[in-house]
Amino acid sequence: MRRLRALVLSGLVTSAIAVAQQNSGRFECESHTVAIDRLPDARLIPIHGPDNSGAQQILRADFSGFDAKYTIQSVHFVVFFTPEPAPNLSVPRGKLSVQALVTKHGSQEWSVLADEDGRNSLLRQGWYENSALADLVQVFSELAESYEEPNSSDDPQVTQSGRPQVRIQQAESKQPVFLLTFIRLASAGGHGDVETEEGMVLDLRTEPFTAPAAVGCIKNDFASEQHVDERISCAWSAKQQDYICRTNASYAHEWRFLLIAGKKLAVAKNGKSP
Image 1: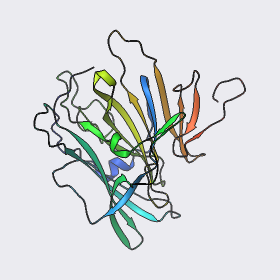
Image 2: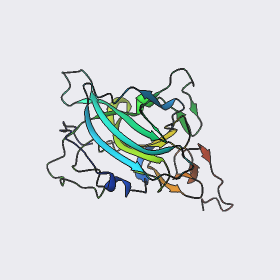
Image 3: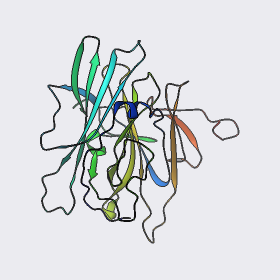
Image 4: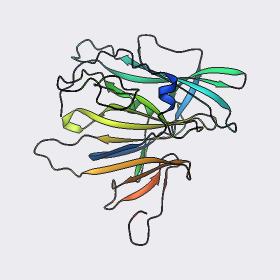
């Protein structure tokens, strides 16, 4: 596992046009430990204005042109990194804060993605786990390695290598559904915190606006240890109006589920997913 270093989080700023053209939001990985999380308490909660005290803006993105059946006309996302007050750490560690200015017909309102307390118990439910949002937004800031290209991604939202590589992609034109992707930290027992590629859904189709689910790919390539190579691939389905995910996690075969709905899909009679 690569050594973590500090990243100078200097303005991953993207124009509205460049962002709006990124209508895919696909998420996939192989040879990792797959985590599937439901976020029953995660909501966009109203605030008086953007809260950036002690934080640094690392991304902003604008989307508009939604279908007229939805209440919102446009949304302006801002993502901040807030470091933990721990001067003994060799690299900055902290949390991401996702905030949004939502414009409806005749009104505007700022909100922040947060857990709404006291609604649900956080328990494992078979193939997924009910999780708290706060546990999924822990990140390190990290310098790019010297051998890395300045920008190894074809995504215009990522202007430099390093971590946490936050980006927001729209699922489909006219749909206020988004996939927030970034590299977070997850506990790996005696190995400490390891990098995890995370994909989190933001669903603004109906109120309250929610972050219903997330999938993560946790690094598990530890020397001298055996591990099961799990994989997952999620892509937006216009027919289902949801992300269809294929994975081999939790079971000894490939299976499919709807990420937002949290529903397993039927397997074909031959035992394979169509």
